[in-house]
Length: 143
Image (tube, rainbow, N blue to C red; front, side, top):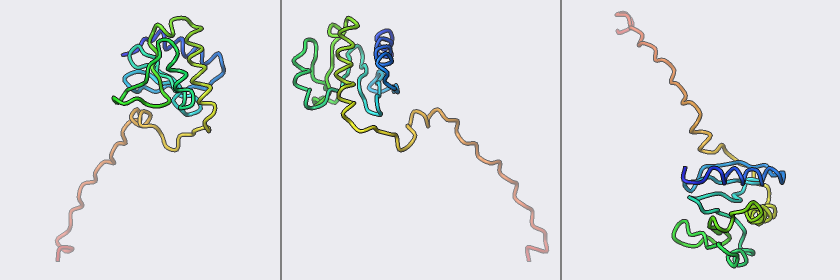
């Protein structure tokens, strides 16, 4: 994987300790942690991706080791990257994750309306029904 599994385990532990129901999804070449159905945080390479919302965006960027999330080449308002030095200790990581969970708590609960593609891709393909041989027509029915 393109992310550090040990750090992802630290994130899982912090989210579980705080009682959040979390769904993990593979995305952005890394892993994403969904809380209340919304992207909260994750990893792309070794950078922590964090959703802080537009109101807290500039404040988050003022923190050490934070920078705009520019996944598509343009900054995504409300999302930041945090370099590994910014989440070295468990206390630092927990503080960043709290920023993300605080923002996601302001959003309405999001329930998936259809199965995700990752789940659908894991389902076995439906097998086609065996074809019946064509019935032979009698000479009388051909007339």
